[in-house]
Length: 482
Image (cartoon, rainbow, N blue to C red; front, side, top):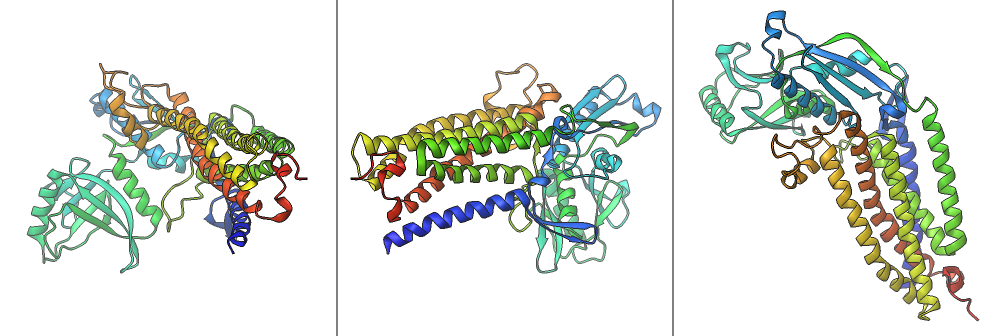
């Protein structure tokens, strides 16, 4: 029974890898007329960087009169640039370039096309970047200054989308600051049980106007009756990014940016990748035989994992929100490097198994166990080092509001102590997204190296070694049984 379960392990793990690979490359979708409904995103949903796919350039200027324009300071322009950067990251656009021209009060924004767009509307693509996105609470239905209760980031700390299963609609859950909690408690205590609602506005748009049943003193509120998860997510992201100090309008004509590598560069890279993967597999099988064949399956799973994490495969609403990621040429370099590390991990293990069989004269099962155990420390040390480097790259060149930047911030005070270090903003905008993409793909590749190159490879090799026809050590680099 034990041997039988071991044999099944190989087929189960291999089948899971093949299914995962198919789904990560092709996804699952369905057409309703001309509209495609995507259930699981595939490789075609990857947002490619400006260098590969091209994009758009828009120039924003403050939507104020000439006399008010003189009152806008460089600090206001820097604040607007920061918020636009954050909104781009919230839209998972990491290969963007944002420049500020303080003299002419302009903010120049460049970002790549959406994936598989044939009829792209640049105006619609940049419209929400320039929205003020000021959230305000008022007593009653009207949004006048006398009825104002709460407003902006001084009173609202954070927001996140959610779903009210009891009533069947989407919501945005708000958390107040300490100051906002006190103001909201006083207002809800005053209005509790009355017919007067507390209206919630996003800029000049009413998004919710609930009545108050009881005083709310815990600093939490909910925006209700939102039609879709995308709408709830968009509202939450704008609140979390902060409101612009002034509304922005699109100045002049939106310019189309052509890909710097040429229109056919993606096809060439794809073909080169397929050829390279095939050559690596041939070499692995020729040199390491059965462990090499198992390594090829594991490498396929590693590639699938990288595709899945950049396409938005894990972005299903019922699972968690992890949308697509902008993949640039340096990001592809990270993919290649991490796959190389996956090959290296399998080579180390295969060599250890050969040594155990030839030099230490161990049994096949003992050699496989010893090979993986002795090779793990070398694999672990090399991969952990790369994880640290990837985290540093993502922290320095990534969005200042990102997890990695927050983790690395306490250790970077020496970098620019005189003016205050803000990760990502101290480096030229034209390279931040590219290096961030490199760090991301390298990090994800290393993680999947542990999953596929170590764990899955071991399970598959131990499983296939249970078959009598594969018990001969010659399949593993040892000496043939007499």
